[in-house]
Image 1 (tube, rainbow, N blue to C red):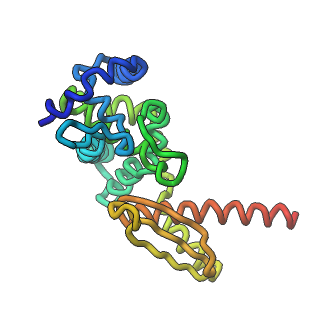
Image 2: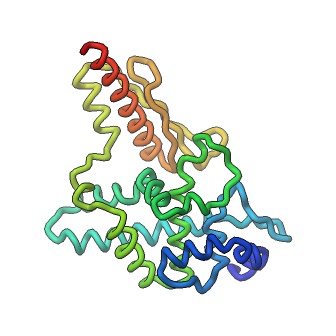
Image 3: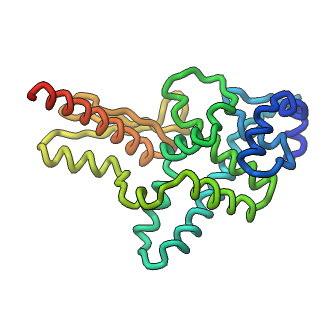
Length: 249
């Protein structure tokens, strides 16, 4: 199946040497199957259509990479923190695989400059870099196997780009922080979350404080959408209260 899907992109990868050199630099080795990385860096909006109408993009590799990343991170944390409980390990894994964190990680290794997408600069583009990183990990697994992928995630992605000590101290439960803030200052809080009418696979969430929209977020789950909306609300509140403080001073 995968071989038939790779045929239409037989020559596409070779036309873009920048992608090849970036991947070789990132992995430390030349890819065995260059075309699988081309697919990993092709967003659904730029899908390649085969003769039988099949659309080729990075969604299947994203699914694969997501599962592998979660497995490797869980095993890594279990070994690194032998005395911590399940709650701590779950929170740490969530912080690392959180969509915003993966977006930042994808940009750090330069995937945002390689991703092929036909989306314009709007909210629909917010999470595609993190998705591409998962697809990239799926491609690494397909190309080099599990052990190589595990070492890449731990020795490159985590070792070079993740400050675990800082992450331990960081509270990324934005929804919990927002609820605590509104209770402290006796503000009315409402959270409305539902499927995006234009894309049923995506959830959208609106957060209102005192009936005014304070945050908006999207995600692949209700929890992710609400966390993103809460994060935006906290950011806007910080801006508002910083301005008020400066006016008072």
